[in-house]
Structure formats: C-alpha cells, structure tokens
Amino acid sequence: MGSREEFIYKIEHTETSNNTDHLKIRPNLSYVQLLASLLRLDIVCPLPKFWDEITNKFNSGLISEQQMPSPIESKKWYSVSDVQKRDKFFEQITFAHHCGKLERYIELLNQHCIKCFRLES
Image 1 (cartoon, rainbow, N blue to C red):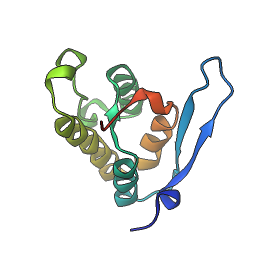
Image 2: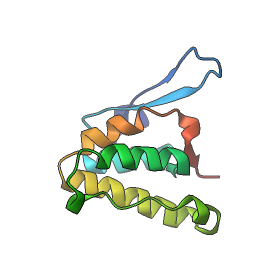
Image 3: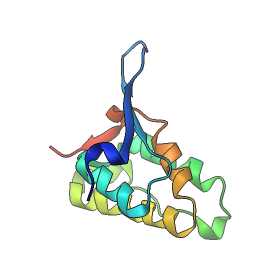
Image 4: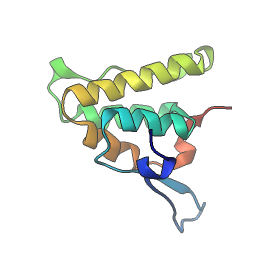
C-alpha cells in the first residue's frame, strides 16, 4: 500500500478564528484507499454532532428505502468502544461505495475540521 501522502490530498490550515485544520481527502479515492487512509490517520469516526450532520446530508439525496445506516447515537457514545464506532463508520462508507456515492461521502467528510473526528488514543 502507498504512503500517507498518496491518499490524503492535503490537510490545510485555514485562517479562522480558532485556526482549525481541515481534512481534505482526495475525492477520487477507491473504497480500499479511503479505508486505508482513515486508518493511517488514526481516525475512528466523526464526533456525534458532526456524524449526524454528515449522515443527514448524505441521506437527503436518497429515497427513504435506501437510507445510510445510522451513526452511533450520542446518548450511547461513551458506552461504545472505538472498535464499534469504527465498524459503524466503515459500514457507512461501505454503503456509500455500494450505492455509487463514495465521492459524495468524501465531500461531506471534507467539510469538517480534523477536530470533528474521534482519533485513536
């Protein structure tokens, strides 16, 4: 498998009031490359508030019978292991891949700063 730089387009520093770093994943990554890049960056999943937002935006373009699996509920967040969180996140990525909308999902991930994601400790 390639280096981290091959999978990540850039992590750009933006001049905002809180100087956050935005994750910019290449939009044309394959399914396997996306999973590998998230593992290399130690990303477990989006934090609850942002995960809900990403899921809702993704589902807004789908018919109700084909909705993305729900993220971990925020009320269950602290009782669920990082492995379970990552499994659920990867389940969503797999869903996006199978319905031909992986680039759309990456676009939604890229709208959030790196601080919006749970990182492995």
